[in-house]
Image (cartoon, rainbow, N blue to C red):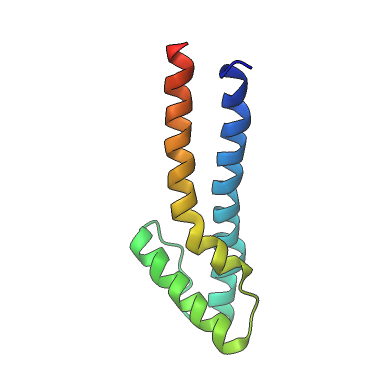
Length: 97
């Protein structure tokens, strides 16, 4: 199997992973923070988003909300970095063939 055939499916997995994180942050975390009177402004800064995630985790523990969303967001950076490195390596290896 040629590596060129893996580029698009790999990109779809990466895009789905990032899209899932954006969806969770925008449609799950922010409305929950707003509902409970916390800082719900949408920030671009990753540091402020991390702080909002920590507030969301506290809310989930305090009010017994589902924890699937904050667990996804906790591992998002690690898995996203691995997927990004894999994407770059896949492009490099496909170019070398």
